[in-house]
Length: 367
Ligand SMILES: Nc1ncnc2c1ncn2[C@@H]1O[C@H](COP(=O)(O)OP(=O)(O)OP(=O)(O)O)[C@@H](O)[C@H]1O
Ligand SMILES: [Mg+2]
Image (tube, rainbow, N blue to C red; front, side):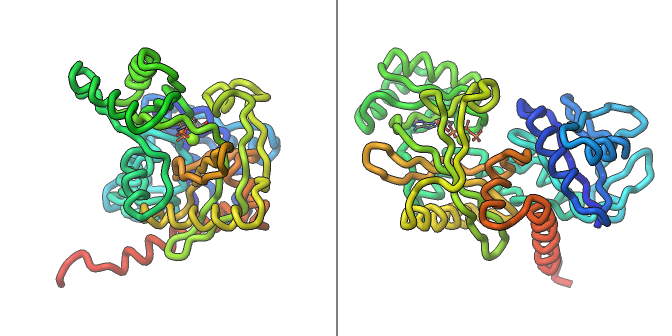
């Protein structure tokens, strides 16, 4: 099979993507052809030299880079299909499945998925709508709530409302009435905990909201939950399965940006999570329900909170292209359920093809 691994990208998570994609490319079994497509930080796509793949296979610590060689600029052709959707200098490169390993904006938010749909190319992961909704924490919560799933309550605020003094006052009053202090503030569509913070007073809320609005024009205000952070991997299309849940134990007050990427002792990962049989079963069941409520396909990591005060379980958010380094939670949780990394990668490739074939059988015209 010809598998295009697409990585890098115009995103704050460019570097994380390089590490995730390196692990994936390294683990695609021999007998398949790996096509490395690097996206530069300005958004242009370039075919990478095969030598990069050889280097990855030779050295378990090697990491892919994006070399922006103008002669190797990749073009995506609408309607091109597996034979010619991807081309370089007019020469088509056959691709059976595209594997976007791009976190956040332009990777996880439905935009690149739309490009693959137009190119008529099978791709790993969620479709356009599911990816776009999962990127928006407000819309995700609305759908989960409608499905009767337990979410952390929230008040959403748009920048235009926040900029009007009267509207802002009524939003703050609503949050004060519905939740007690402290609250938590975060952008609706961001990642990596950027712009996320706790606020203990009205003044602090106003300041933190201003910071969150640097990242998105919509923010969420929620009650601050002193929580254990539980995560659960899900894969599948029509009959999704959930794997053994894991736990993140941050050494900071919450799982902030530094705990994720800067401080090497910022968080400990525990797989399996020490939850007991009943709660483990409940997490897995809710993870599948949360996935289905968004019509997801392929894979996702579903993140939960367990309130330390009373053990109440809440869905927090869902990541449709989770971190995929060899030490990331997503593949580790699959491994803990008996699915090794390389098998997981190929399972996702086969799920992509199955979804594509099922959708191709649908009518697109009356003739
Ligand atoms: N209501 C809350 N109460 C307490 N802590 C919270 C709350 N919401 C979020 N947090 C903390 O902030 C962290 C980041 O929040 P969240 O997971 O919602 O967004 P994100 O991590 O930025 O998004 P992504 O996982 O897509 O990168 C959580 O892992 C948790 O530690
Ligand atoms: Mg998160």
